[in-house]
Amino acid sequence: MSVDLHRWRRDESRPSAGEAWRDAAARVLGPSVALFAVIVGVGWLIMGPFGGLQDEIAVNEELQEGRSFTPFWNVTTDIWSRLGNTEIIIGTCAVISLIILWRTRQWWYAVIPAIAISIQATVFVIAAWIVGRERPDVEKLDPAPPTSSYPSGHVGASTALYLTFALMAQRIERRWLRRLVTAVCILVPVLVSYARLYRGMHHLTDVLLGVVNGVVCALLAWHWLRRRRS
Image (tube, rainbow, N blue to C red; front, side, top):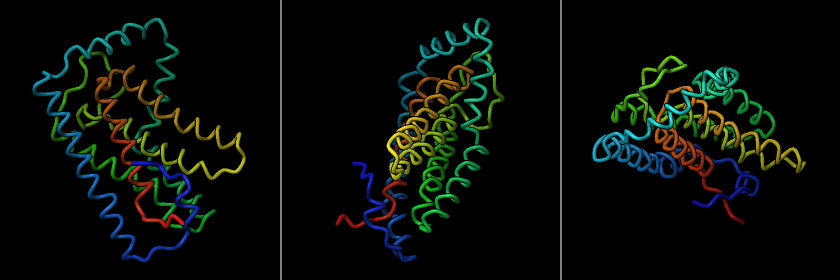
C-alpha cells in the first residue's frame, strides 16, 4: 500500500454518512480481517511447527542479566513501557484528536488515530486469546496483563497511534518542526518495543508482530476514506 501524504489536503470534502460507512467497511474492516488471519497464522506456526521458538529466550535472558548493572534503565524503561499502556494510548489519542478536530473542523480526518488504535486493539485481543502464547520465562518487571504474550499489545498500540501522528505531522509548515515531530513519533514505538523486551514481558517475535499489526492498522486508518486525486 503506497502512502499518499497529501490525500487529506488535496480533497477536504465532507463525506456523507453512507460514504463513510461504505469506505470504512471496504477499506478498513475487510483488510483488517486479512491482517488478523495473517497474525494468527504466524502465531500458530510459532506455537506449532516452530516449537515456540525456544531460542528466543536468549534475548530476554541477556537483557535480564544486564539489569543489575544498569539500574537506571529499570526506571527509564518503566517510563517507556507506560507509553504503550491502554489508558495512556486512549488518553493521548483523545486529546490529540480533539485538537485536530478543533483546528481542521474535519471529523473524518480527526478520527484517523482512533480508527488505527481501535482496529489494532481488536486484532490484538482476539489473536492473543486464540494463540495463547506464554510470556518469557524470565523475571518480569511489570505486572502481566490478562492477555497472552503474542502479539505485543503495547507495541502494536504505540505503533498504530504514533505512526498516524507522524503521517499527520506532514501538514506542519515549518520544516524543522515537522521533522522533529515526525522523528519523535517514530521513536516512541521503538522505545516501547525495547522496554517490553528489556522488562521481560515479550518474546522478540511478539514485538515484531506487534509492529506489523500497528503499521498495517495505521496505514488502513490513513486510507480509510476515498479521496479524489485531482
